[in-house]
Each structure stands twice: as C-alpha cells, then as structure tokens.
Length: 351
Ligand code: TXA
Ligand code: MG
Image (spheres, rainbow, N blue to C red):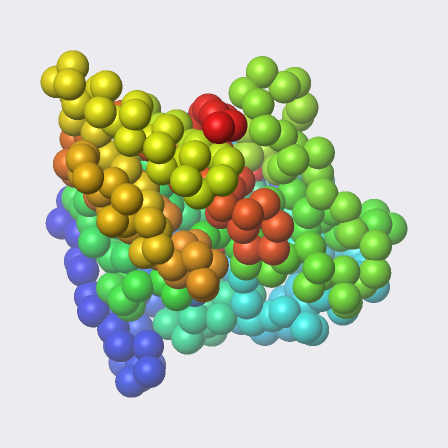
C-alpha cells in the first residue's frame, strides 16, 4: 500500500486540507493524525472492524480498548450511558485537552472498540487538525498511539512514517506534538475518580475540580515483580521498550553521575555501545558514550516532550545499554517516571 503523507499547518488549517483524510476515514480507512499528546492512528469508532484494522497495522491483537476521540461536548452523551457529575466537571474544565474519561458505554459503541468492556474511553483533543478532522468527517474517531506495538509513542510524523509507512492509508504531518506524553486517563464511573494513567493533567489539577482522587495502584508500582493488575488493560503491556537495555539511576545528582559514568565506562571497555540520558544541567558531566539531553530540569515540560523521541534516537544509534537519570515523582514527573520505568522494565538503581 502506498501511504499518502500530507503536511498541514495547524494554524493555517483550511477545511480543504482535510478533504482526502475525511474521505479515507469515511471509507473505513486508517489515517494517522497529530494530537497535542502523541500522534493517533484513527478509524471510524463505530465500525465493528475498526479495532481489528488498527491493531493489524500496529501488530497487536485487538483485545486492547481504544480511546474514542470527539469534537463536540454533546457526543459525550451519545457515547456514554451515564455521564457522572465528576465526568461533566472534568470535561468542562479540561476539554479540549489531554484528558481521557472512562464511562459506562452506550449501546452504539461496539464491543470490538472497547475490547469487550462495558466502559468506553472518551477524549476531546485540543490539536486543531485533530478536532477539525473529527468534525469534518462527522465520525467518532477511535485512535491508539500511531506506533508499532512495543515502540515509543510517536511525537512527530517522521516517527509514524518509520513505523507505519506502506501499512496505513494516510499520515497527516502536523509537526511536533507539544506535550509528548499520552493523555491522563481517569475512570469516572464510580464516586471517587481513579487515575489509570498519569499524564499532563496531574492528580492535583483533577483534585482541584472534583475533590478526592485516587491513583490506580498499578501506577505507583516500582518493581517488575510486584503483582498488581492494571485497570487500563493497555498499561500491562511492555511499552516503549528501547532496543538497548535501559537502567535508571536515582539519588543525589553527583552520585547518579558517578554511578552512570562507572557503569558506562565498564561497558565501553568491554566493547559495547552505550547511551546516556542526561539533562541540560548535567550533560557536561558525562565524558564518554552517546550522551543526549532529554530537556532541562528547570522545565519538566521539556523533559516530557523529549522522552519518546530520545528513546527512538537511541534505537537508531543502536546502543546496547542506556543509562538514565531519574526525575521527581510528582506532578508531571509522575507521568515521566511512569513511562521511563516501563521503558526500563522497572530496572532502577538507588545510589
Ligand atoms: O493521548 C492519548 O491518549 C493518545 C492520543 C492518540 O489520543 N492515545 C493513546 O491511545 O494513548 P492508546 O491506545 O495508546 O492508549 C489507550 C489506553 C490503553 O492503556 C487502554 O487500555 C486504555 O487507554 N483504555 C481504553 N479504554 C479503556 C476502558 N474502557 N477502561 C480502561 N482503560 C481503557
Ligand atoms: Mg499506545
């Protein structure tokens, strides 16, 4: 299959730019499109075979529920059976934006899209290309991250091309995703909202709107062996696995730099290719290895938006071992560490 790649400027967007993508979606094809979190791989959410097609392209069995993307608040009521008070409050404050709500599904949502669950995941994205694409198509768009299963989520069209060129109908290139981490997922079916996946919208931000909020215990997991079942089925998969073996070091800055250099030196002496994930502040502390900065500690948002791209760069460099600094475990750092720990298979050393 020849994949159409079309560049669209989010700020200069016209309806005409979207005609081809709209027509492909209406014919039940697959279109990758930018969102403010990561690129999504979209299809008609109400088509019973949408999830099958999407997961065939991603190389994963279709037992994982998909997020349905909407462009209009009224659509919430069409897809969800019971819109709880907390759901409505959160939607009003954070939509359009990087927040996904889990609610009881309505009859029109096929079980194939929800992975057999009676609940449905709904999000209204903020990216104008995504919003207009949904509006113009007149559809609800089911979209997981547009990566091949097991690879880091794509934050640029180039990443989608790397993974899915020749496999899907179209890729819309709308530039870099500003946030760079997938949306926060909140289960709002019960009386207390539960965060199933941390993201840009933090626990404190949610709590300010709806009061008491809890984390699904899976999120707080720090060791591979811990036997906790994730409430978001997709969270259980080994995600974002870079090709090199990733280890995270936590402790004081000096101790972390010393430990990483010691490990890196030993591996380099044995002939291995080593990658190091540092920050703008610490880059000079690493004399050897393929050293890359993930962003600046002065602005966690740079770290969030740099993570997935960095992991892909290390794959291209074919490093065999990667050593990373760790990040604060609250606010946006909670989401960053969640992704980093998964990429490392929970391999973290305290020094
Ligand atoms: O930012 C995002 O959310 C991106 C963009 C494209 O919107 N999408 C994304 O989709 O990250 P995906 O498929 O990679 O992750 C969706 C997550 C999975 O972990 C899945 O298990 C969970 O949402 N999920 C979907 N429906 C659910 C449901 N009914 N109950 C619990 N978890 C659900
Ligand atoms: Mg994903």
